[in-house]
Image (tube, rainbow, N blue to C red; front, side, top):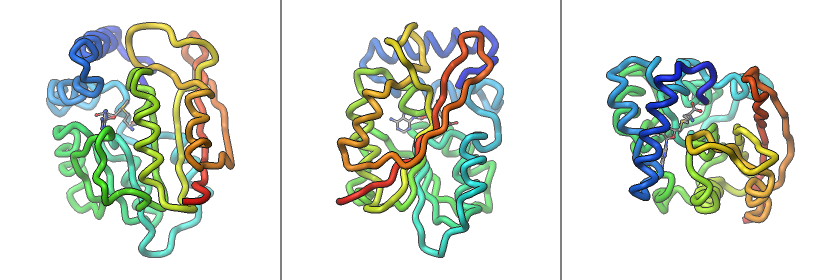
Length: 227
Ligand SMILES: C[S@@+](CC[C@H](N)C(=O)[O-])C[C@H]1O[C@@H](n2cnc3c(N)ncnc32)[C@H](O)[C@@H]1O
């Protein structure tokens, strides 16, 4: 998120996020950003119009799925990860808090079998509990402040079916996060909550991107054990 972004967009994100946090609406700025992009993807810092490379790479070794497997993409942005998962045979639901982003997905992929929806991670539909065989959390938690981490992780965990897979792609921090602007990397202590909620970590890959501060990112595969 935000790699090689022009300073103007970084500053805009900083201001929008700060105002939203002041109003205790941590997700309140995303719709404004998508709306003000006016259909120009270069105005949305995380948008690359392609699946996230760590997800794409992970999918390569993931076998095509038998019919009927359900996938969920959290905070789907403009839909590229959802389309990649659908291409593996999953029946995919993809949601975002931003109605503009969801309308954009539908416009980009008019023939898609993905069910694109507006929904709120903080208040997922009850009928989604333990429903999905595969859930992707890619860079959403890190865009929300530390004060809501535990709540978000609890919500995400609920959506995964027993024996289901949860894939998390995020920045990882070793120290307290710096700065008043997202992204706010996760710590291993925060991630450990998934284990407390019944997930087993079955794979972890660590990546270092080229930013000056050498940001550490991880891709973690969890399996939901038990109920
Ligand atoms: C940093 S972007 C990441 C988008 C995408 N997952 C990716 O990796 O490219 C965070 C996304 O989460 C969405 N989002 C933020 N808060 C949300 C919430 N409470 N419920 C659902 N989506 C949310 C935003 O609109 C945005 O599309």
